[in-house]
Image (cartoon, rainbow, N blue to C red; front, side, top):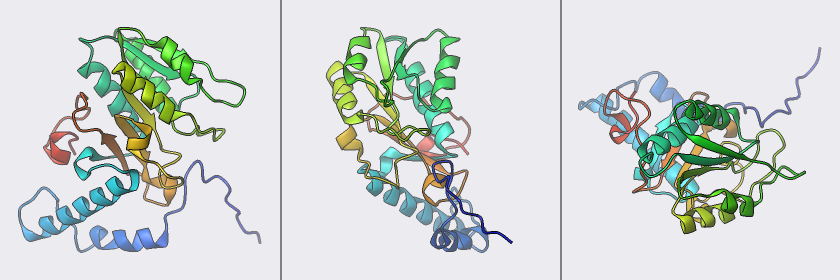
Length: 237
């Protein structure tokens, strides 16, 4: 007989019992579609919007800047591809680091096959990117900088606030993957100065297959998924 001691919360976390109890009514009796006009759907819609307000408050955003997704990978894909194609008339250059999550690195690699130029910045021995390297990499074709908040393998916290200031100074969109930090340490989109931010519920005791994307109001980011009018016509399904 043995007891499992789980030490890999950076990979995923167990669903908190309070979260499960909050979800149960919407998995059983309150099953209405949030897109419908009758009462069962309206109840679900209110729950979705209440959740949106709570997520927005968690990161210092406005509710209308929060869009629910299937998780961090979708949010990263949406941010990077959406920003790239929405701004390709301005330029085709993207800056990121060599130690980003695969959701970022593989997305950038895909964009390279579709006409975009990507600079992969190195990090130091502690896994930290130098903000001045970011500044020096910016050209008149740079449209996006993507640097994670904390690394998913070694836990290094990157200087995203300084990078955010550089991005604003140079009028370049800034995306940060905060999947490892939201819900674990304070995250504020205004302090960071990011235009897009990815997060995932299963990293802080929420359900798997649920995430969110922050898009600062006014940012040029194309839709990633097409279909119905869900999420203010920004994310179908």
